[in-house]
Image (cartoon, rainbow, N blue to C red):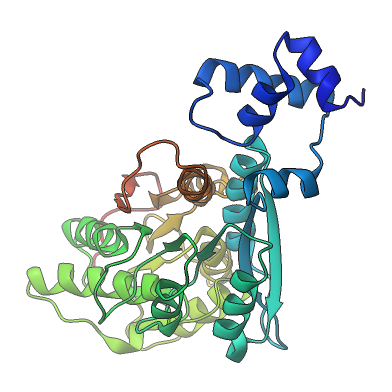
Length: 343
């Protein structure tokens, strides 16, 4: 059922001006009326004239992101899950995405061009690196932005949402130590990304607190795929003194690690313990592994939705959200962790 603005207003018993203002986020329209209008939009499939809407409000109704594209850069199920959350919340407020592909060495310039184009009202940045020049660049632009993550070695004086990766892997390592494990391996994400750096930091801190030192030969940084998880776990198991426990930075990595452990004829939870970080990927539930996985859990989809909510709130000047959020993870103990095997 296709309707225009006049028909939509008549259906709701509201003026065209009120409907238009509700759709465009004007604060004088109360929340109940706005929800009535948005519900009617969903039911009727009404789509406002974007050009007219932009002229009336000065807004594009879009959130921008830059996507690095190059030979050797694999598609990432984690980023797809984050975008799903961002997209769900954007659709709810009738916002669009503008995705701008970029060569990895041209990202800053691409962000600047996207901001200057007038085609987006806000930007977000993901996959933060240790000293990330993109953050200073975003701060120099006159457009709202949110960073998914935090840099290292520079002031956190910008809007962000991050997971407490240090705390997550500290707690996971401490659990393994309490179970008697001393040789603990880590299959981490790419070593230049801050979430990986902080996860290693959390592991190292827990070991040191218990008088143990990190064996660097038991740390592997890689892309977060099952194939890399499989290869890393194979290398660990081939050592003269293989680990009795392993931490994985993703359930996708854990999928490969489990394959290597099974191939070696070992039993997860008794011969070797495993803890994975669970981004709550709908097609890879830790409880559905042959041995249910102990995990640190934080939903990527929820993070995407929250960032969209905050950006749209900034654009529409509605709501009151904190500029900086650090989410704790939940440690969920299942059958993949058990006492260290006796020598």
